[in-house]
Length: 337
Image 1: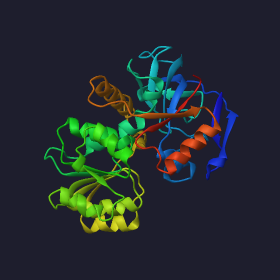
Image 2: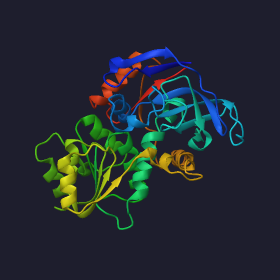
Image 3: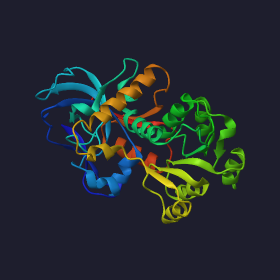
């Protein structure tokens, strides 16, 4: 099969289009012909050799896909050849998703709703699972005040929709452009709850909007310098949800001094749980997300198709993500269409 290979950690010049051995499905796996894959910030972080790169099982990046089942491994009964499916594959499939084929454990996959294209379906798993985990792991029973950094992105979009659908409107986020602001307005956030982070003193503005109070819960989808700002906005004994693992030493000090409860959100976590049925978490959660799309609780993620399976496409997508030029859209690569 054709695949984009990462020859070594570093810059985007290390990608190469090459022939790679086609995987064979093992028991309780299916072989999928990939039709589309989406790009995520974790991709360029892995390319750079950061934290999750330690989990790589092949030199092929990419963690989510949509496609068609072309072969069943021994024992597979719940799916059939020709089924259109999507999956978040973490690092436990045969390879990454910048490729024509992949062998995936059955518990990871879910059938695609009829109204979604391959490109739309490929853009859901990682951001959707991340947003869903955030919602599941924070205590929303008391209707807390919530600040989300980077809410106009893929994860933030679904997260905000999920929270609004549950009646949580004391919710604030940041935007740095008119495109991002308009996107947040379209998904239902009030204009007064969208704070322009390019303006000096915006941190005081968001506190003013929250009745001069800090926030019960801060969900940091950005990391880096924003983690320090986010740590400053969380209340004493509050909750800080860390999605990026890119918080600074200063942020950690601020959070410790406030006796903050820190919740780490990592999609691959359940793959580390050595128990029967642990992987069912992924397929079950993805089916829940697709059901919410069918019920119009959440909308399909906005996408931008960057190109087909090529080094140019991968390089362009990585550059756009690193420059923060996605404007709330998931970047998608088509494969074999």
